[in-house]
Image (cartoon, rainbow, N blue to C red; front, side, top):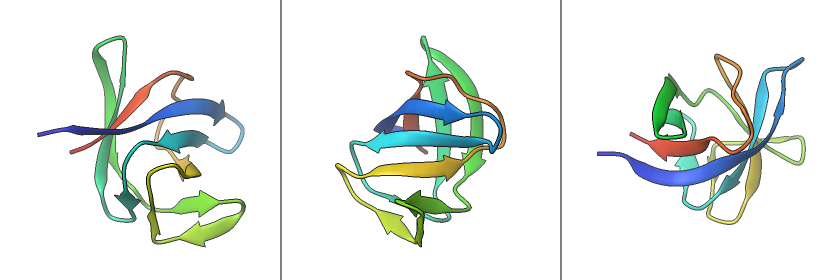
Length: 82
């Protein structure tokens, strides 16, 4: 079962980091997937979470965090915890 936990608001392609506005909690080690337009893009395990340049183990609803992604992802993609 997938739970929507956020949306990509920006993507930095040079460093491969998605900025995600969280609508739910997220922790390092969680498995997530990116979905855009109803289409599953890719899945990955969360290796690191950054908040204002600090590394976190967990982030909560309302945080805006940076996630290193295994592939490029466009703004507006939804993020689901799986």
